[in-house]
Length: 312
Length: 312
Image (cartoon, rainbow over all chains, first blue to last red; front, side, top):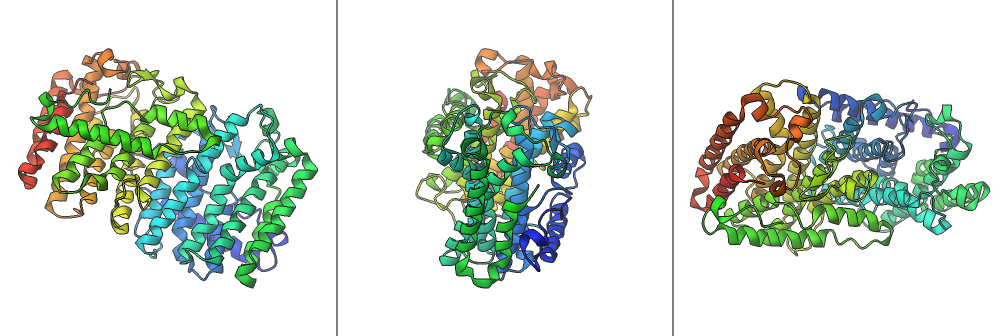
């Protein structure tokens, strides 16, 4: 499941090997992070492992690794932030799928956590994954890779992740999303919702890669922040598009869910053609934003292309 | 509501003024932390404020302040950890009250968050409060008090909080609690569950107070860790007792909930008299553990007495 989507065609020549290697690497790191030996909580840990391991595009960890690598960081220094963003992402999926939220039965081609286990366990899985994400970033040897950054950088990474996760980012975006059900939104309001709900954590992934590489300010960080914001918005617009045009077999989840939930989306607001055009425009702007990084940033440009060409 | 429980009778002469002052102080700090101006998420922020402000014993922040003060820390340095532990505590209450968990309608004398708002909002409130707790500890000026500790200490505080919150602490304890429904547990198994579910965060509050005061190792920290573990367990046993003997008007929540949910408790396992005896024994052991801190620790001994004498 894990290597099925970021491919040579979408991400540029030379990239697939590295992306596949990173996807394998994050799997090993997440395995290590979730190997919490504790007999009292076997079911909770099983549900955490079920939700996190063996599935997913791993887009956010891949962004941490590719950004860090572009700036010269060794992969071992990127393991902790790569794991942290994926743990936050999975916690948000588990909670979003709950009956009181989107009430989804399928995720990544498998029953959602609350369907495979139960609702109470799914609530705790999300809660525990969020705590684990911050633990991984805060531990001296975050992901067991034997390499970590200095305390000030770790702290800055935690700040960035906490902001992207809370009311100003993902959780706030989910609240906007809930409030939008049955409403007619303007295109700027849709984009604001998408920036929070999905964009903030994708941008955060890029920024964490830069911070772990020691790039905590300056034109390269500014360029990467802009790049992250642009692909984050493009990613969610493509998500909206795939909910209309996608193949449920390939997506691993139901399609038409947004319309069924009366959720306003970019296509429902501006039309499918305008959504596709906007996604391509954001892709081009994202690639242009990488200029200050020179030719090293080619793999990141590949991710921008993947984001709007993906079919799952 | 907030100053109604830790009183002179239970906490020792001279204490009430300081406890009341800290309870007022944490209210102001939490107000500041929750003053997140963001028009897009008004309902979420209203639900967060509803859940956090104006109610609760504030036991955990009081422990941060009293421990820090015992070790000579200025109160401004304790605001961030005091706010963080209370935010984590409230998030756990909001999620525990959900229909899929304990399905409670009343908390602190008011409708629970999902009753006053809705279930989806209550899930997001808990998620956002957890992120906010880590944000507050990680920000350079955590709770807006103009004073913060060094990066290494902040990082250690985040580690301690993340461990107390995740599978090894509170979330793990909730999972054990879920699994225990309808089971007959031994007394050691009940105590293990209580240590995780409730004890870990109470112990963490004491440890954060010590860390913020610059006490990160040595016999005083060891004494405080032991003290925190003992009062944490005593607190949950007293909670079990109050669910049998308490007055719902005074408690601000239903009684008999444990029996109704077929949850094994200390009284249901060992009998009410044995539970009361165990709570007093833990109180005495906790007070004895404070010996290395000398007479400065009298206010903490007062908290140990309060924990087992409280009626709400």
